[in-house]
View (cartoon, rainbow, N blue to C red):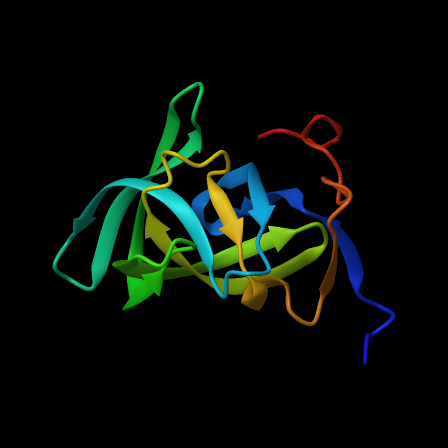
Length: 147
């Protein structure tokens, strides 16, 4: 049964990661993926249950931000082509439109991918329906206030 109060989102949206001070990150909605994934570089285990990495904000402009986060868990993830890799998962707050929720995000190299972030099923369950014919239904970047 479909709840009528679910928000409609497009196949791509701008999202915020407020705990990390990141706004307007372009993300692809991936209903085939269970968890969220973000492009991280120079991932370092700090040895105290935390990792540091650079979150790549923009591939063309090579903008990145250093993040230090507690490791929520480590796990193996199978890619869309069937390759299993071990990844760190961290937890942070994700804001999509008016919805704010805690999510686990795995950190990986997405240098070959167009989008710096994938939003998986667990982040959108119970709140959203995806309209694959449209993108940026929550508002486009130019219409939003920049930091």
